[in-house]
Amino acid sequence: MVNLVEAQKPLLHGLMKMAGIKPRSIEIEPGTIMNLWVPSETIKNPKKNKKITTTTPFSNNQCATSPETTTKPDPTKPVVVLVHGFAGEGIVTWQFQVGALTKKYSVYVPDLLFFGGSVTDSEDRSPGFQAECLGKGLRKLGVEKCIVVGFSYGGMVAFKMAEMYPDLVEALVISGSILAMTDSISTSTLNGLGFSSSSELLLPTSVKGLKALLKVAAYKKLWFPDRLHRDFLEVMFTNRKERGELLEGLVVSNKDTNIPNFPQRIHLLWGENDQIFNLELAQNMKDQLGDKTTFHGIEKAGHLVHLERPCVYNRCLKQFLTSLHAEKSQY
Image (tube, rainbow, N blue to C red; front, side, top):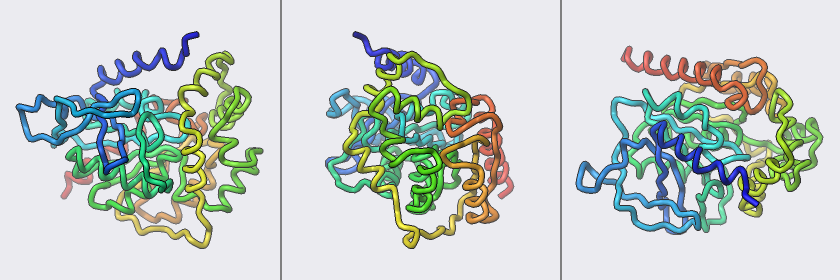
């Protein structure tokens, strides 16, 4: 029987290409391959322009040298990097944002390690390693400055990127995420939602488990036939062992956490009905991050704010990006 989610992938890939991005695979280091969707205009014939060698992705996670090469992004278009959460790869997560941004921005959509074909033989499962690999990948693609938009797990990776690469990351937009998953936040959040572990919440093994995840992630009740739930589980929840290890590597002790002094502008763009990371957590984080941090809540939206209310989310995101451009123009 045809998997309906898998069958829709060519359509989604086609829509992304129409919107102006194409897939590339980058060897970060031996044994580590990261897939990214990059601006179509940066993919050139090797006889033209300065070249940055990349590889072409294959379904079996093997790579071959591509006759195409990737050049630096258009210097007139700011670079925006969209970093996905834990329950879906890059373009699935950001499918409603890509087309809204590509006219004025160079959009990059990575698949983090163990999502969407990105793999590593390293045993490091920390958000810091994800951030390091993404930063190196963007550098290899010729990106010198970028605004990083991070959702949920991707927000934690984005915070790490900003801390590790202050010369690369000039601003952050964070949705439904926190600086770090401390053991106290992990325990209180899971207890409040009625789950015994992060894996039970974020790595469902059954239709019932996936429905439970969607129930706490969305503001409105979402109905899909059970077959579609089963197909989604089969396609989107691969690499379960490694993803379980990613969840284990996410939690840090309260005593080991500190608040970095970020030089970047940070904008918190939140669903006001987020049950996973609620408004109180967001407001507390804003206070901790200081005067360079702003907050905007979107009503009638939960954790999946960018999917539930994409038009409002896109408008708010573009307003922040426009304000950044206006600030830079003053100097």
